[in-house]
Length: 67
Image 1 (cartoon, rainbow, N blue to C red):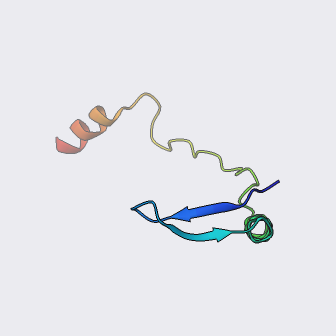
Image 2 (cartoon, rainbow, N blue to C red; image 1 turned 135 degrees about the vertical axis):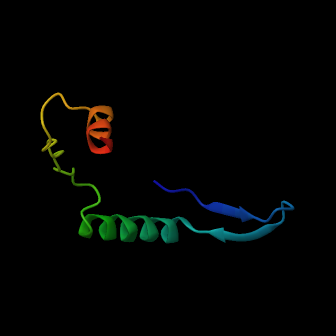
């Protein structure tokens, strides 16, 4: 359920009133757009494993390169 919303400016003066019907339509339109872009679907990406030698850290790799 959406309630009528009043929009105020920086001085507290009423700029406009957004009706419940307008809020309802806006909410469902936005929801549908997000669904189409699959924004609510979980991402199934996996981290790639390091292809370097096991146990070789960044410092060891840097020192090896420097010499």
